[in-house]
Amino acid sequence: MSYFGTDGIRGEIGRCDKIHPQFLMHLGWALGQYIRQDEVVKSKLVDGVKPKVLIGKDTRISGYMLESALESGLISAGIDIYLLGPMPTAAIAYLTRTFKANAGIVISASHNPFYDNGIKVIDGCGRKISKETQKQISRFLDQSPETVESYLLGKAYRLKGAPERYIEFCKSVLTDRSSLSSFKVVLDCANGASYHIAPSVFDELGAQCHVLFNRPNGVNINLNCGSTNPYECSRQVVARQASLGICLDGDGDRMIPIDDQGRVLTGDHVLYVLAKYLKATNRLSGGVVGTIMTNAGLEQALKSQSIDFKRVPVGDQHIVKEMLASGWNLGGEPSGHTILSDIFNSGDGILTALMVMEALNYFGGSISELLHDLKMYPSQLVNLPWQESGDLDHVQTVASEVQQQYLENGRILIRPSGTEPLLRVLIEAETKAEVTHAMKHTLAKLSELVTT
Image (cartoon, rainbow, N blue to C red; front, side, top):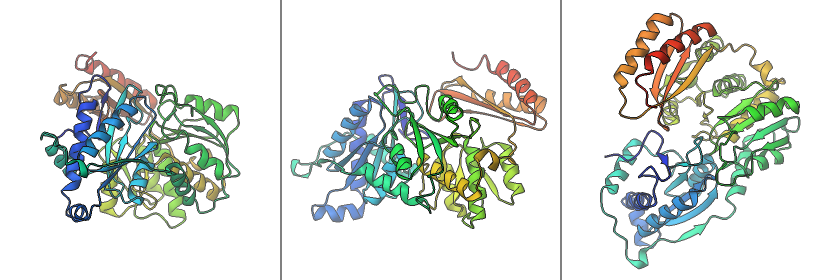
């Protein structure tokens, strides 16, 4: 069996048997066994060179417990561990690659509440591991752990200067390091993994930065803040007459912007800004990769700019896969994951914000002005309680009925979340009235199916 979900392993502390010290000790051992079967690793083991794995986390209180469990399992398999402490997911991926580690582990549940947590495994290239790799690790999870001989045990180290390394990398991305001095920014760190990284990046690049929610206490991550709750940031942008608001999520791989008028934008707005900028500077390779959740308005606006567009299933791993296959260098999701593969091959909220600011400097206007020709379709997204045992066939029947009866020039998408026990219902149409009418009938049809 496979122990991995659509985005690693995730669940509620105390209620999920996978987000539990005993299982995670086993997972650490299984990952170690998978690493040790590599022929290059075997040849180095002969010379006494042990494999190494980097472990980073966000600011959840449960991170200490899960980190210790993974550490024990990996060490028992003869793997050296380098602890990073709280770091954004993208930073862990970057350091895994540049440090030439065999793998990296992210302990985070991203935008979820503090009582959830999760595990993402990253390969030596800084990408999330493939489905095939997940299957191989799962096969080791089906075996009983056996500790290596004492002299072969791994050791644990603290990787010194990890935040500073990543801050310098972020600063190096901008073509003009002095170009942020004209920006007045409100930065929401979601009390998450970016709390000590993002303020330093923007401050050292010269931006006038007012920082919100950068005092994590273990239980306040994503609490009424961050990319899923950007409304205090929006209020502060208006109150402080800022040029931009930047809302990160708990593990720092998403970025939702607030425009200069206090309007909460989406990842679709970010894709449009960056697509126009990269095309104008001859840096856009091919077109843009979006998902089935991408607003039809973005697709039409890109078409008017003669920019190709492709849709893939939800999840940044699907976006990266298509970008690699097509040779395209820009993709993302409405939720705020944006991937600029010329810079790095995973979502990075800080780097996305820097590129948006660079684009605004290039065009010489505000973000609201730059988006004036992007007309988004009215849409509504509703999350309903849902369990894996739910009747998906009937759900799709409901979607087909609503599409035929109420959405002649719109669309409906109903799918289970890959990260939470929720059913996501998205309706998009040419008018707000159509959306409201169709959603009313959809929820009525689904009322007997969803859990309470």
